[in-house]
Image 1 (tube, rainbow, N blue to C red):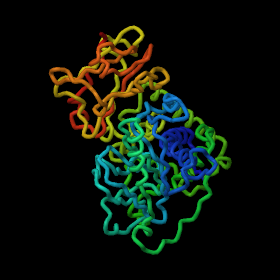
Image 2 (image 1 turned 30 degrees about the vertical axis):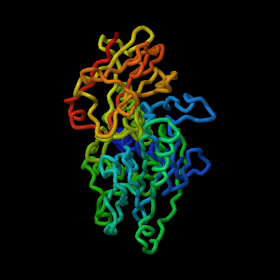
Image 3 (image 1 turned 60 degrees about the vertical axis):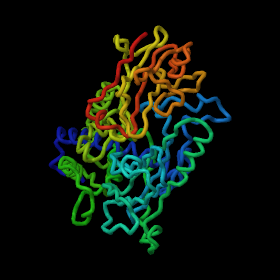
Image 4 (image 1 turned 45 degrees about the horizontal axis):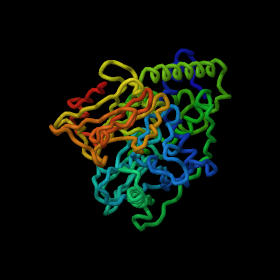
Length: 464
């Protein structure tokens, strides 16, 4: 029942707008969860909870199709796809007990980030945080009060009872032997419920909820709040009943209190049709306000860089979280993979175009991209953000590219142009461009502090 204190239309509208932004990443994440973990008829289904599905490497050749057929442009709203990272997806239901995530020893860059129901990161397993060694890592939800068993190397505590993993494993090249080596690593990613890992009796299973069937139009209607009410039940606030719950910012608790006054309290019983007409109308206006604000902010940003992060980083910045879900769902935070982009050349041409000029990118001696694990510069044709078909089958160039030729002074020059250079040294460092507009995205996997704090900057994209 709606509290009389919140019948004031202005209050309802403002609360609805704030709640829509807060709930947007939660519902977007549920859309993916529903397809991957609940709907066994969906092509994206991974097999339910506690199962990894390893997706085909985007940069690996397909014997049945041309190479570029596997290098599709990203869907609308997504960022520039990193074709050197193969992804694996899994979902965990933490209500009954924690799960153990196990990884093999591996020197290549890899990361298995655990994101919560609102897509905020709870923790990371992988090269940067836990190192190259094999290990077992516990993922525990807000209801668990136990102690990790012997052998567990790290514990990730989550604020939500449902979490997801979008793992990335570095693929250094499209050669069959490299693809096979990468696949051998991924096949050793393992998920086990805690009782199976510890050899203890299984706990009583959590009740199977009536999962609401996802429909894309939900986000534009008052039914949005019925979905949010259901999903908040997996996102408890800290209390004597849930002492292990991750503390949330005060602004989050304040919003949750106002939502409770509206009948959106996490019990999954909110019924929009039972609302007074004036309250329902103000909820609809609040949704329209929030959606318009999100679209304005999204249009003003070139990409999703700087939006992803942990709860300590994002706090109660609900707009930032919503923008991340809108522009770059499941993007990694900058300390994991730092991204920079050449969107204009040194003479101000925006975007640069290889139909009219050739370009170079020169990293001066001692100023190569500062990355702990690897770096690469990937070129994308605009506006489709599609990799460029070329005779070398080269879609990125970086420290793992065989045959690169360094300058005599120790620097490195990359040649960005449409036609292959006649000079053999230039050809070795050629990053093929389309006969038209493009952008180049530089990625540092495991960036050094100089990149994160701005001491190291992108060199110019210089016309020749």
